[in-house]
Image (tube, rainbow, N blue to C red; front, side):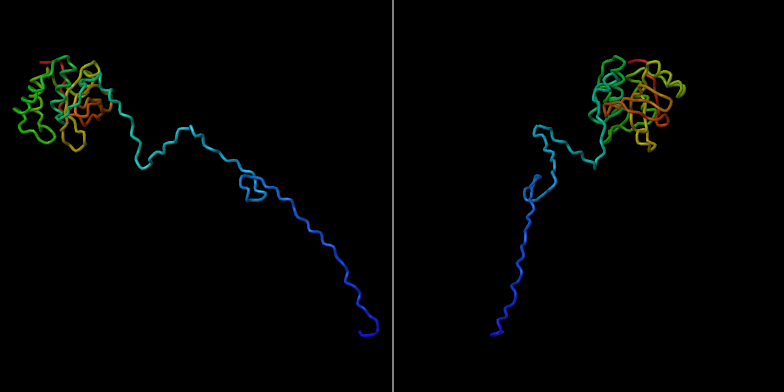
Length: 209
């Protein structure tokens, strides 16, 4: 080192090329490079909102309030007294004039004390009260009853609506098929259906007293 004149060779120079890729900003979010293009569906502001259905409750069929207007009665019995309501409906259907006070008086006289759900009657008392206001006769059997109804007559009867063995509900039978009867319910004010075995004390209506 000193005086011999030796000097180390210079280090070679290297050239470095820095390649910076071109970044193209596409897509909806400018902060994400090279993001794929995304289409967003924007709701129409004039579109009616979709009503979400409550799935916890079963859907109930629409009730037609006019379905019973060509049936024996046009009005439901507001007091829950099916016997009076059935007699009134039968009288209307037969073209007679209804005297609600007279029917109520007959019920009080012959059926006794009115309970929370109306009057409690046996078969004999039921027939006795109906006879005061309607001309009726008992059918010879169920086939005879159905034949009379198919020929255009109605019948007033008691039914076991709950299937508990109590013939506690008075109705007007209006139509039938092999398995049962359609009837006008004076309490509900509409037409319903009942099986053959749940109809009791039917009386075919021939007219008004």
